Length: 359
Image: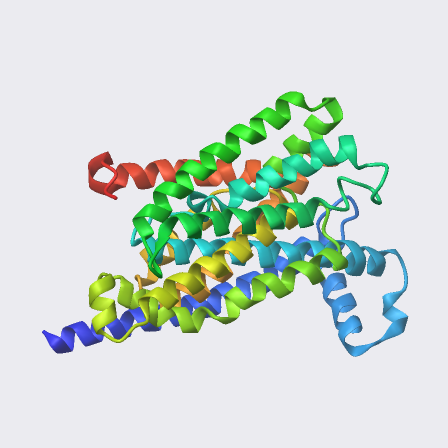
């Protein structure tokens, strides 16, 4: 019995390593294809040539229209999509491990809703009262406002759910739903008082887009999301222990409270930065971790890095579809991810206990 269990675990790990290599290769190839897609089509071979010239410093190949498009427009967009997709997917995997429920999602803790409310306030109120005083409001302050909204939501949530130095996951889940509903109501109120132009901006923001990607925005977002990706090995063992229950994990020597606090903080930072950079993009945090879990099992040592790669692939692929399906216009990327994620979420609900939601 022990030998068969050990063989099963080793087989799962071997499959996971194969999947890791396959996803890494797919992510690299998809990034090259995505850089070449758009109003000006650039073949993958030419994209690779320009990127290699940039790495080697060959200035002769860095002149001309193609190099300008690749390096200044497409490359930061694709890198932002990779970062945001990875951050949202890993955040979903962390939330599912923390709540011990595969239906958990970063949106449940109110971070996305809080960031969206702050973005709406920046668009409507900033444009109305401050546009003549600070640069080009609301667009100059939009990422900063959304990020602050996500952090404030997380702080309020943590204060509600923490008593005597211990954070209740159940209280956090319920408080997150309440804060999300309140943020949605206030966002609706701002949409009601906005003018036509503000309403168009607000609608486009709420549906998500990578269209505003730039090297300056990427330099702000990357230092916030990368710590989440780099600390995945430190969180994996703790999340594996939490699968047995908090009491059991504590007796195994796992610092449960520290793991929960670190996971919550990293999710807040990653999701807040993602919403600030690309708007509200749903379902990535549910779809990707669950598909990976079905493929390689619940071991977070594989689940977290595979979720990062899967989320990056999903968002970049969705961005390609968003750019091509209504070309030369651009479809908001949130519509594409919702079209993929909503049917999957319904299937997941029906699959669990014959349609009963087992929380």
